[in-house]
Image (cartoon, rainbow, N blue to C red; front, top):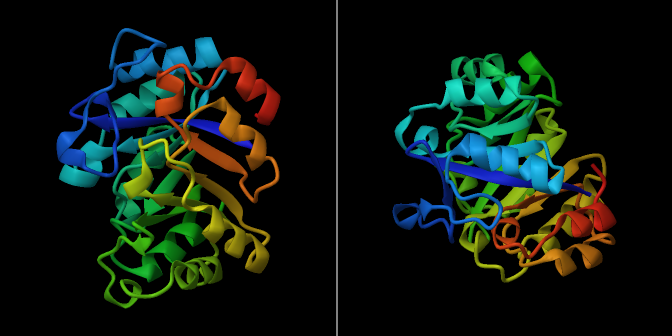
Length: 245
């Protein structure tokens, strides 16, 4: 299981995401670094925790359509491997993110407007470089696609896999930052049983390093973590003991 630190980026700084209530997001306060500057936070993840593969949620792009491409490029130049969710809704926006240096572009259910586009992106750049994020809120699909609004999330995953998706993020925004445990695990188990070939990444609710131990027996290939890292509740020793980088 790979630990992926999260950079939630808003107004050019790293913020602490809580329950998807983006209007209330504030610059992160971290025991790792005395700064909310994204370069400083990323370097702290690498220096103090040994983590250089990051998940970057570009909320400026998701909310306002303004992508932080220069920052993505700078992070890539400094040797970080980035999964970037930047509100992708076209081939052009996906190309811009990948050309800026992202290792993979995340196509989020929240901003996807047409399932056919997901298939097109996977076809164009390959399943390693296009990751699909199953965005949920309180267990329900977070989507503008009418035929996906009231269907079980597993049905959306089936369709995404049929379009060529091989890497999947399962994230319930209502649980982010609350440290109440992974509400997505039952769904991840269902997905693994039915589609065992998918790489599964999840997150939202991890409180400390002890949470990693039971996840060794769960169908989780990658884990998105932020709050537990910034509060010092997940250490480098925890990561080395329970995760594979």
